[in-house]
Amino acid sequence: MNIKFLKVNKLSKVLIIFMSLISINLLYAQAPRVSINLKHGAHQLGKRTDQSMETWRNYGLGQFIHWGVYAIPGGQWNNKKYRGAAEWIRSWDGMPKDAYDNLYKQFNPKGFNAKAWAKQAKHMGAKYVILTTKHHDGFCLWPSKFTDYTIINTPYKKDIIGQLVDAYNEQNIDVYLYFSIIDWNHPGYRSVLKTEEDRKAYETFKVFTENQLTELLNAYPTTKGLWFDGTWDSAWKEQAAFADSLDSKLRKMIPGLVIGARFRPDEYGKRGFDSNGDIIGDYEQGWERKMPNHIDDVHGNDWECVMTVPENQWGYQSNWEGHIKTSNELIEMIAKAVSLDGNFVLNFGPDGQGVIRSEETQLAKEIGDWMEVNNEAIYNGSYLNWEKQDWGYYTKSRKTNKIYMIVCNVPVSGMLRVKTTDKIDVIKASLIQEPTQGVDVEIIGKNEYFIHLKSFDFKKPFVLELETKLIQEGTEIH
Image 1 (cartoon, rainbow, N blue to C red):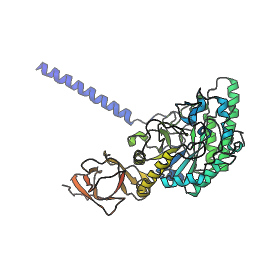
Image 2 (cartoon, helix red, strand yellow):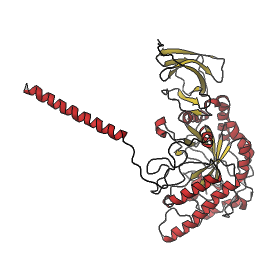
Image 3 (cartoon, one colour):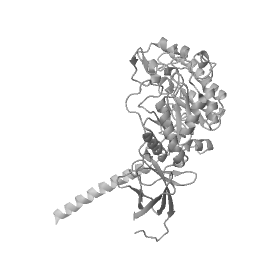
C-alpha cells in the first residue's frame, strides 16, 4: 500500500514538473518582444502597402546588368586567371593597380546597343532591371561631375546609364540603379577608421557619396529604386545617422523610391535587420545566389533573389567554368521565388565591347519563349498555402486569384498529387499551353486529388490552371 502511494506520489510530482515547464514555455512564447530603443533602426514594421511597392512585389522576374571596365580583362591578366568574381579583379595580387586604374582609357564598347539589350530583356519577360552605375572600383558609367573617373573621359565618351534608362523605359521595364558604397578610387574612402586622419578623410568621402547619389536621381528621375552594395565595411557601419539622413533625402527626391535592406546600418552596426530583428529597408536582400525553401524562411518580408548563370560570376568572365545553369533550372528558380512571395533577378555580364555573350542570349531567349506562354503564373504571383508537392510549385495571382501549378518534375506515373486546404474542391485543371487538351481530375480523399496527364513527354516546365470551389457545409467527399 505504501509502495503504491509512493509510486503515485512520484508520478504526480513528475506531472506537476512537466506541466510547469509547459506553462513556462507558453508564458515566454506569448510574451511580447522587448525592443531596444533605436533611432536609426527600422522606421516601419511590416510591408509597405503603397502602389510603388505593390508594383515591385508583382514583378516576378527581373534582370541584373554588371558592366564596367572590369569587362576588359574579363577575369584574366597576363595569361593568369583570377579565381574570384571578375568585377573584383582589381583586388587581386596578380592585377597591378596602376594597370587596372588606366583600363578606362581603353574602354570603347563599339558593340554596345542599349536598345538591343532592352529588347532582349523585354522578350525574356523582365519587368525591371538593375543597372550597375559604378562598382567597387569607382568607375562611373554616367558623366559624374564629382570625379574624373567616368565614362566621359573614355574613348567612348557617351553616357551609358542615360542610354540604358531611355531604352528600358521605352520597353516599359522599370529601372533600378545599383550603386557601390565601396569606392577604391576615391582618396577619402576607408574600409576601417583607425585614426583621426582616417575619419577626416572619410568625411570627404561621405560628401562625395551623397553628391553622386543625388546626382543620379536628378539625372534619371524615372528611377524606381536604388540597389546598394559594399556596405559591409566597419567604416560604413559607423555611419548610422548619416545613412539614415541620406536615405530620407533620397526618398524625398523621388516619392515611392524602393530601397532594399542592405543600405543603412543601425547605431549598433547591424545591417539588413536591426538590433531588434526588424528589416531595415523595403525588402530583404540576403538571398544572393541562394533561395529560401519555405515561406517561414522569409519571415513575412518582401524579398528578391539575385542569381548568376555560372557560380559567383557577375561581371564578364572570358572563360566560364563549373556548372552553367540551364534555362529549365532558371525557370524552376523563377517559379520557386514567386511561389514564396519573392522576385527572381537574373544577372548578365556583357563583355568589354558591350556585347552580351551568346550563352546568356540563348538563355534569355529560352526563358522568354517560356514566359510568353506561361507568364500569368509568374506576374502578380504569390504564395498559396497548400501543401507543397515534389512536382513543383503553386502560385496564386494577386489580381485574379487564379491558382496555378508550375510543374517541373513529372512523376513516372504521370499523376500529380494536389492537397488543398480545408473546404476547397478542385473541379477542373487545364494546360495553359494547350487549353483544349483534357486533363482529368480524380478525387482520392478529403481535400486530395490526382491530376492525370494524358501525355507527359514535356521538355520544359509547364503550367496548369486550376478551377476550384468552396465545398458546401455537410458535403462529404468519398
